[in-house]
Amino acid sequence: VCPTAALTEVNHTGKVWAALNDPDKYVVVQTAPAVRVAVGELFGMEPGSIATGKMVTALRRMGFNAVFDTDFAADLTILEEASELVHRIQHHGRLPMLTSCCPAWVKFFEHQFPDLLDIPSSCKSPQIMFGTIAKTYYAEKLGIDPAKMVVVSVMPCVAKKAEAARPELTKEEHSNVDLVLTTREFGLMLKEAGIDFMNLPESDFDKMMGESTGASIIFGTTGGVIEAAVRTAYEWITGEELENVEFTAMRGVQGIREATVKVGDLELKIGIAHELGNARKLLEDIRAGKSQFHAIEIMACPGGCIGGGGQPYHHGDIEIIKKRQEAIYAEDRNKVKRKSHQNEEVLRLYKEYLGEPYGEKAHDLLHTYYEAKEKI
Ligand code: SF4
Image 1: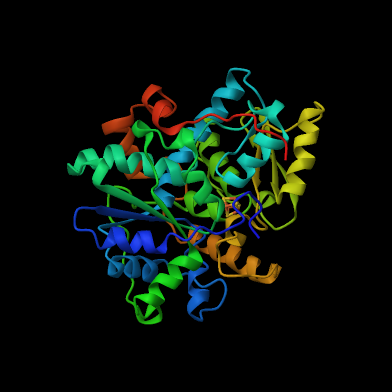
Image 2: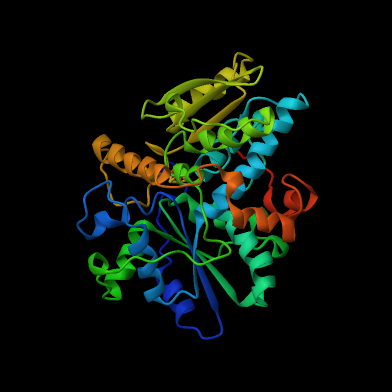
């Protein structure tokens, strides 16, 4: 069951088929990092199989006008989030900074820790950043009316449906994601369309919002977001190249993990929790003034998004989650570029449209706010 209020899976498959069959619509799709290491299980592949190329081909055969990667937006998120972390460290801002890309976690702290609304990063999640950039920068570049664009997400997550409907993320000027499919719904649609997934050739994501680094891929597992942020923050703070990008102390499946990274003169202290019971312990420490961390990553699902509520059922089998996690790290190792600030398409986006990371326009388009909600 998804650890959020979105306990009922709202089925968007019919609406996605309708958009794909509407000649007036330009339909783009993004796929989250965790989907590619699990979708194959719906077609008989072993857990931990990487099906990125087949997944992209399958989406094209379904009729999407452009097939993009949420990983592109994950790299974009890191440029904003690492900037925010460096800013908070160097300007005595509120610490620890908590990651904000898991909507179940966001909903949890809005209800349970309304006194700590200033600790999460103000960054929108990669899913929402993608939708915002698709309907502004990409639409502008291609001369497409954003009103005719439909942005579809394929996510490992049921809570991403609720996130896409949050009022502050659906204002017209920040319009974002229209429809969200879970990994399971995506598999169902492929079966409905009679697409023979196992025998598909492989293909690549489309350009402009399709490039990704290894840093963005590890968003799919617990510890990955903060590891990606540290890869970039390290180089920005020290001005030196980070040679070993693998922070093994941040990895694994233990509920709470800690790591200390020497960043120049700074001993950067990182906390990581997955599953909300573990998150609560770290939050209680912050509330009590006992937390020593500079940054904390929290993900609601076991193992992070690889164990998400929209994935092929794992029934709590930790071995399946570990195999998906190994696949995520293998995808990272397969990349030549493994730091988000090396993503050329993201750098072009800043140069041609956003300006500086964490600058005024980036802040306007890529950041959000949180509200205290009634305790439930
Ligand atoms: Fe969704 Fe990932 Fe959060 Fe689970 S951990 S609720 S899959 S964003």
